[in-house]
Length: 224
Image (cartoon, rainbow, N blue to C red; front, side):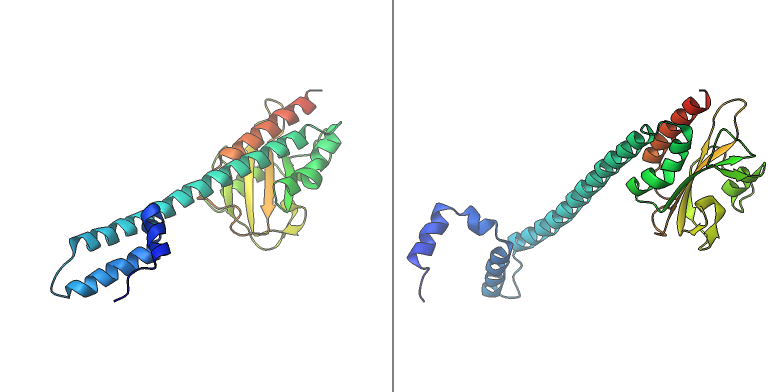
């Protein structure tokens, strides 16, 4: 039987890792070995290599998942930082509130963003006005008790909603805001056409950071 091509043999002897790193070649070698020894003999080394290969595949998949999650988190952090900077650009409170929908919503890749307050407050032009007690009812959404100051992420009714400027959204984020004594009960509202954009299982750290930056900026405008 003819042996290896001399050039190929020389390359393999010079760099055997080229052979060992090729999974398909190693599978073929193991299969050839199994065929030689017959069905009545168990090759422990071949079984061990197969088990190690399976474990390596799982480790690589887990590694790729961790890297993807880290990248998503980094990308999300950078997006929120840009949105916070956009909050600092307006020169008056009218531009500050109007900029939520015009400037900040596109940065966060949501279709709607608005500030809702209970009662009528001339000092908050452009905010959505709600009757007293409405924010607690919106947050409760059929539950027996509201969720207090918790962020609520959930599916939304696919109908036009005044909270979202008359736009139908598929999911929403509701963020209660404590503006201090003498100030209205307030709610920061985000809406997305993607039903999976906001779900209860998602983390809220970045949203909390953005909401805190928005709250402090809004309090600054109210105290002027």
